[in-house]
Image (tube, rainbow, N blue to C red):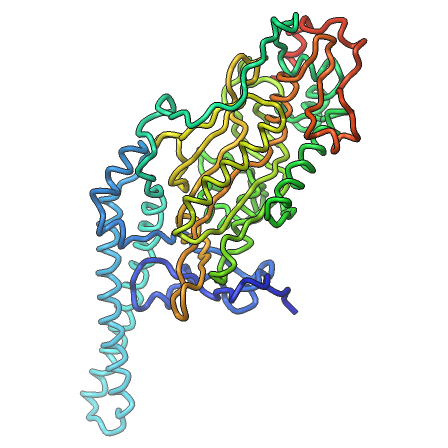
Length: 499
């Protein structure tokens, strides 16, 4: 017996509907979610879970000038004009195929009276039937090829950008707020220290053995380092639950179509996704992916919106960027733990929910005694799914720079179309939800900020008050006697093991 759907889910769709308005779309399995009802309940191995590219093609065609400008503002390699041309050709092919099928059906109806026909007429009907069958098969092949091209090109079109988003590159990011102040280390009679120096001094992390076991940019957390990770996860999950989120743990793998449905590229040179050989599974880069897939193909009751979820997962990313002092240690790694927030919202409420997510993140990080800034990120820094994104960057004294610790994105209906997540506005009126995501706690970056912000003159690290209940009441990490070399730990060693 399949598992029960959550109580607020009205139904699970047995087929996905793209925005390609062809009357014969049911004839093409590529647009179907599954082969039967069993997969509507997510039974493993029973077929595709999400549509390949449920893009609103009619919107692109009707708003071509605005879509062109959006593509220019985001500086992405997409061609809306080509998408419209492929769409028109696809529709025309579909109409021709429909006309041929009607002729074939009419000819088949005539053949039912073949017994009363003259031989010449019967032979002509048979020949016509063969010709129509071959023509339909040829057109359906052309139609399938046109669909593949249309999907590939339309998938390059990003979400429409919120009108208040700054236009340009990262340097155009607009500061929304500054929280807290930079710590004055000179006042405490000490210099700022890199997190890796602090972590190595107190035996909190081991890159060397991890590199031997798994390769560069993997790590072991040890002693209070391991306890700090668990405390951060428990802290974030506890506060999320207290703020109305349903807390979950998720699979660390997802099918390629779910990954693509969330707007991530599972294949290609630019992909950051680890794929599992000889399968359609990928290691997830964020719990956003399995949380989005959780509701794929479902219709949610309007009165249950917003649906708020918070999930802990391990995250895996292949690309770690250029090596250098600013990326050493835990700042940029291949695997990390994270608590992610994910929300299904009514379209009219998604902007309000976005601001609530940002405010919740600010409350979290302020409680850790961090100084950070909130940025409204510009068009060229938005991923394809996001209509608007806030980044939160914490001041990391040892790096001498702000570093991103969180983001909060409103993806409007971009992911919902691909995942086919709808809500019931009224009987017979099912509409796409808006999806939003935000980082509650990306553990390694948070450890970097805590170690560099709260290191003490005696070398220990003060545990923020908010974390102490989750750290067994401990006030400090490390021992004072380990401070003999505080501030002058071997940078050469740190560079070798952290890169």
